[in-house]
Length: 469
Image 1: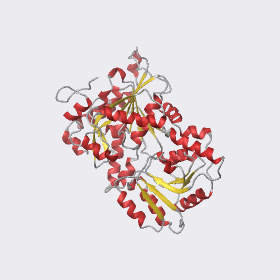
Image 2: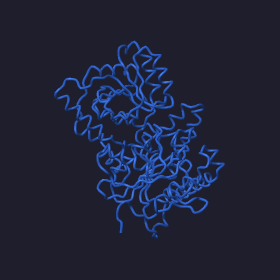
Image 3: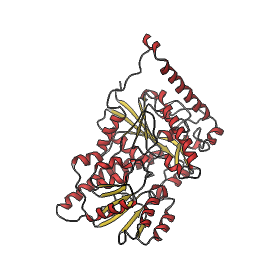
Image 4: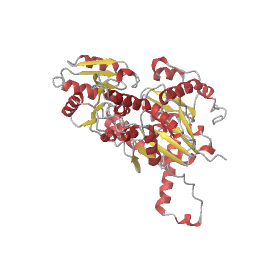
């Protein structure tokens, strides 16, 4: 009899798309599988070739899921240096151009067999359940944990009619997360608030960044200065990812920052506009294509600057600290986790950013202690996750019906009935193509199409529902 704890991690993106919800759940699956006392399955979206061409960089596409799985596992092994024993499965997805996001197609909870439905981790639970039509997650799984990655309200507020849309989205998010999750973890206080949620950064950094930091510490024993370059920023090149704030900061303080060079690295839809704005500045601001942050070109930079306030927990900030650099960033809830590191300067005003940049350029970073390096690691992140998700204790069995259950408080009974009714309303509303379209779903996302069923080896909706084993 299999006594292992079964954990299924569902996420909204997959490599080679280098976004947080592709990378962090992958590391989470790998580190949760260590020790062999858990059976871990990572479930990621599978896109049609047409959507892959829109999403994946450098014209990278896959004809079969097995090809993409090979790519994902090799990428992970190159960064950690070992293989991990977790399963990788795909669910059908479609790319929503207007949302710049991948949305699930059909009932993706069916991927996990009922006899393995212990724990589900929903990375971006609101995103995964906006248009969910299928079994209720809390009925399918014994324990469902949602991890809030994205500050959707902040992004929406920047759009036309953003205040109204943000108001509606806030209530929709709270509704679906309540319906489908037992436990909610917010990576920082920068996310939308949810009832009974906990705030905990359950992410770590790729071990390679800590190795780079150790190498720099060793260099400093023989050399006075090991950072030969100045200030840089790396991130997806869209205005909402910090570029607007950074270029405004540089533009407002051109005289104060005269003589300082700033290099920007990234790819994205707003690359042309970012480059044009940078050229119009009197400062020396150079724009380069995006690269992996572990690339040797970044090793010698001394200062990472990031005034963004749309992040929840900025991965590149953690990576820069792990490499032993100074970080100058906004004094904002998204950066609260980094307050414990002496090389991180939190700035509440633009003139404080200027002072922080000069301070970082004229001083040397403090070497990270073993405890600080551990805090940035995925080992520590996994420990924090298990505690925050209440998985550091045996999973409670569903209580048996006894005579005493008849005396449950009226409020508890009414609460359960309300939850059931609320879930039923969501299920029925999202069961029709017309209503789905009205709420912004991708056309044809109620069931996977014949081509995706063939590629994934699942039964066609017109034939037999369900997933082939």
